[in-house]
Image 1 (cartoon, helix red, strand yellow):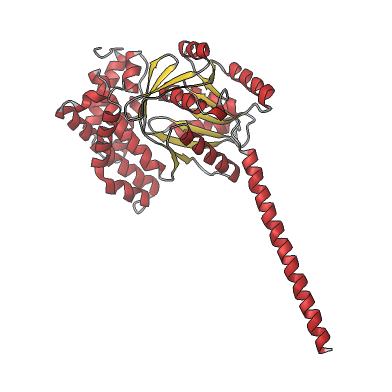
Image 2: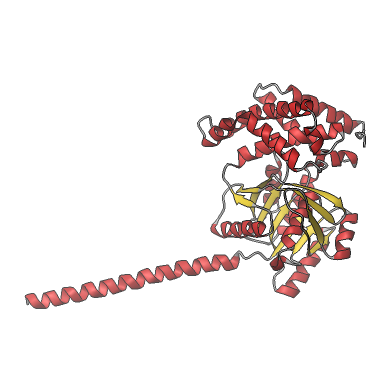
Length: 397
């Protein structure tokens, strides 16, 4: 009996181990299938770029220059002249300058001037490739065109579940506007904030110069699920392959304010002086102004990060340890790297358009008032730009 019991117990143990092994392999198999399903679901189909300015053109041209996205990048622009130039050669020409390189490339971009034309592109894509939605939408516009662009993004993304919307803009406050537009139209796309430190400017309609090597930092705005996370990883890889160094980050608030400090230090000064970025490095007086603007911006940024993240947060500690000199030196470095650039604010002023001064220097001033921080240099620049806008006065050519 004892021997029989031992045999029976041994047999049961063997069966149990076998069952456990089968269960483990089954779970592993289901996990592998789940990951495969996510990869299949999140393969990038089409990309829509809202905004035909320098950054929108740079993104469109460089991404479309990669073979797998040829003819699958759509640009929505309000400039008929730019659209006509793109249609004439069926693409955007990107010319590298300075630290970026010396290459010239053309990305085969499809262009639209209205949402109805975007719908035509969707139908054409569905007929050619078997899919018609935009998996990835970039918003790359000035603050003045934000609300219209947010509305357009919501309509382009309508019905595209599991898509991404990446906003690459200057200033502060635009993410909230885009988020409200997406929610209002019941669009389930995941919103991503992008901070680009590189430089670009339009040489002529259909031709953009990539004139300053920088990187694109991206971070999700709110929660993100497995499907969107996988799609974001693919988007980051695609951007890197396209020649736009891109990385995922979590400390987006300090990166946003560092960019605000840089833009505040360069854009307003070049607009008032009517000169390209490199002119600011030609005298100690203008370099001192850059430092003064950056110092005020840094002090305000510290107060904002403390309010949003807490006095003991790692993000505040890292930003504070860098000191205002880090922001100032970064601005001087950007001015050097983009020395031939006409700043976006100066370009807007020359064209009689509203500038982004309120979202840059204006944001430093308004947040400074909230926290009791004096910002006399930024306030002076803000007032001067407002005077130029109100009088429709352009700087000397």
